[in-house]
Length: 195
Length: 195
DNA sequence: GTTAGCATGTAAGGAGTTACATGATTTT
DNA sequence: AAAATCATGTAACTCCTTACATGCTAAC
Image: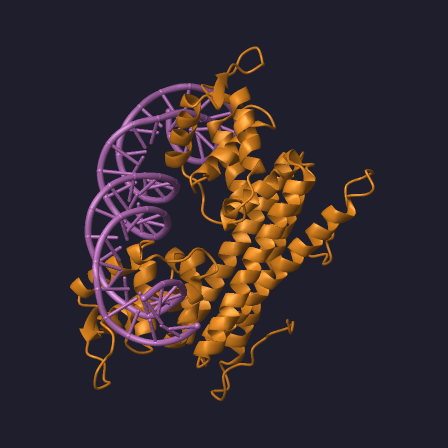
């Protein structure tokens, strides 16, 4: 049913699939990954790890190096964790394309089939389209907004969402384009070379 | 000290300055305003209104129309509420330029001095700049990211933030440009005609 | 007359932050 | 030797969502 709280769980499982890690580093990676919002605190990470340990999704491992200088607890995914990760990544539905969840799923898209990827991308796109429609509709009703800053904020918001819709469309096309040729991954559709 | 929860309070105070309203409509406006994220539920709005009533920031008023057909409770700001609103809007500091709070402050920028506006805009901009620097720095360290989707997500994120920085810069320039001529409001710097 | 939307609330519970608490190791 | 940063945790608290509960009014 993927409650909101499974977000951390999914992210941790995904990261640990790239190699064993201890909590402190997990947190840094997590913050880099979804750090465009607020930072994840220890107060939520460590309890989450404990919970996953109890659920046998992850386990403690001894680092392969001869001796570890630091007192750190290194985690790795278990088989059950791998299964759970696959299950979560295969979920299509509202849970998959809500703001936070979408980013995380996208980050681990390599672990899924193209079919799933397309469904998630398309779901996300229509979700955003709905928002645009709703705002446009409600804007037509209230109309009277003449405040300069309110208008500017509205405009910028709409433009940002429209931009994300275009981004998604490019990605969808790239996925579809890659259907025939099993060769290389589709070229990134980066239109604007920034910096 | 402006905890996170004061967000609703500030928004309600601001909206009620544009005229008395009942809860249901307040919620609709709120959702339209900061609705790019998740929707505000009744479970958080009504208790917040009750709390503001107790604090004498708002009061119940009888609608000016002869008879109201519906059983609805219309709220208006009190003098104390106006004072509190001014106080909150004058706050400069981290609380003012965090993601959610910034949008709300910006929405009610008309109620503040240009000096405050500039400080908030600049604060927000350096906040975003910090994030970009941090990501760029940490990206240089871990380097090894070769996953196509991880890279693409990173790129899109950076571009979005860079775009917002440019937006803020334009706004800052517009504010500064309006300093000399007390004539009309500065022209909106909308560079890209979308839609 | 029945459905859809307006309108207001409460109770339980989840998720995460803040603040606290502790100590090792590396750098300056 | 001190400061910074690595590293792990817990307890209290806050905010918010979900689900429940109720009843009116407009439209079909």
